[in-house]
Image (tube, rainbow, N blue to C red; front, side, top):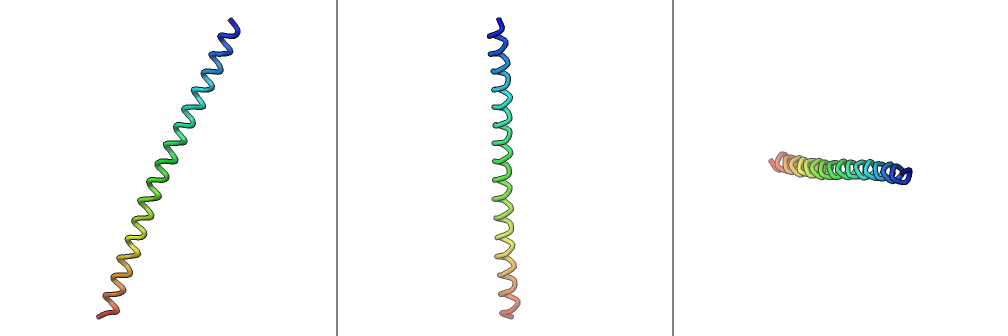
Length: 59
């Protein structure tokens, strides 16, 4: 009977670890996606700023 309890505790720990790993994976995926969005926004703003400077100095 003790083996059953030991295996149950081990299973519970493995499930907790799996949930934690999945949660960390989701957090990393969200961080990756948000960093891609931020970098695209910043590079777009740099292009717009360069275009505005070009037009201002052209005139």
